[in-house]
Length: 225
Image (tube, rainbow, N blue to C red; front, side):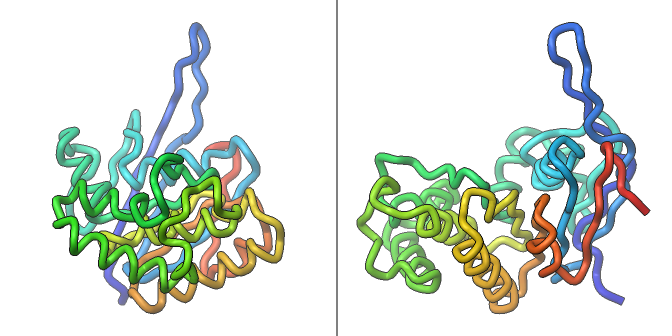
């Protein structure tokens, strides 16, 4: 049997907005094996992005627990969560989240510098990753000088620089046309195989979800059986 990398049990998440509360996740149970490629599929508002953020330590649940490689992430201190996010999880977002004043190389280096990797080693690793994602000639370009597809490639390289065990991608093709989106999906799948990572993608796109061997459908904050 495959080793379980991540197990979420009874996850609940409620957001309070003034006098109103919105229950986004309502008791989610899920297990993800090491090396899995999983798509979280659902319409907007079903909780897929929230689930992705919880398992990646970007947010904390109101109930339930998350076990990652035998450790209870739900009980981590803020410092432990920061190290967890930086060193064991990579994030790719729909909106790229690149710093506009930095070059592609500098953006990719950021997580490595936070992890206290030397400037020289971080730059070497970033250059190799940018070359791998097809941006060998764009190292000194800033985000405004790059296309949407190129910016997403920079974001993927940034997510990989600390060699994470788990790569989380939230609507990674959402801002791209179908051709470039398909190229990004091919790149993610190729990198997953090369680096033997676990990949979880949140998407509302049936074509994107179809690329994953396993699809988890979320409906109204619950997994549809």
